[in-house]
Image 1 (tube, rainbow, N blue to C red):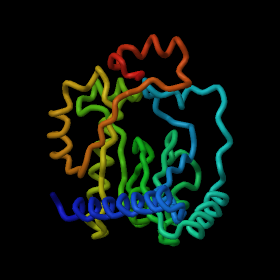
Image 2 (cartoon, rainbow, N blue to C red; image 1 turned 180 degrees about the horizontal axis):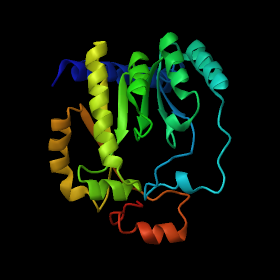
Image 3 (cartoon, helix red, strand yellow; image 1 turned 30 degrees about the vertical axis):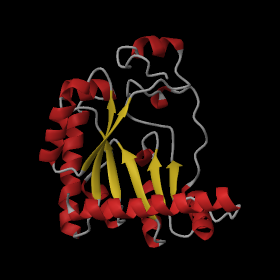
Image 4 (tube, rainbow, N blue to C red; image 1 turned 180 degrees about the vertical axis):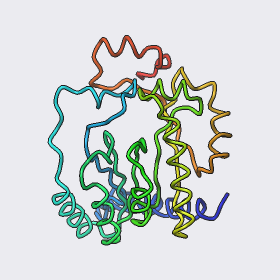
Length: 242
């Protein structure tokens, strides 16, 4: 186990322990000192990929997005209420939102820890340089297979795996140049299409130099249409609805 991972694990364990203690105090003695320590921030619904198990890219209507200015106000308000906290941004694809990197830089200026889940398609040399300079605890990259035909089919974007490999190398390069340590993690949706290849994928990830893989099974979503359910039975495991 490397030092960075151990440090993050200890920090996470401490946070979980504190949350357990405050919840126990509230349940047992009605003393409420509970506050969230981790926030999920959905930046947008729009996405430039067409993942087979997600319909963000195919919605008839999209919810109005919070402006970057209002995001900053919200983060300030959360910090005033909570104190120190971590926010994990997700979408859609967060980096499609104009001004999103500016928001990450604001988090860094305000000493707010942030992470993000992204497909990495918007990452260029200058983009990665700014992202790393904003000092994230983690960057999570969506990838479903180390085999191009499976990953690109799953993600609905030709050339997605090649982009991801370039992104990982860029992140490693600027992590080393900046001498700032953060976790590079893979987010993998496990389905009938890729589950037999997961052991090989772990070896691939190790060779690529990433720190962690987070495996999550594909699950039916509340807003899938009957047509989508029928098509996606090819990916879903039996009884995954339960």
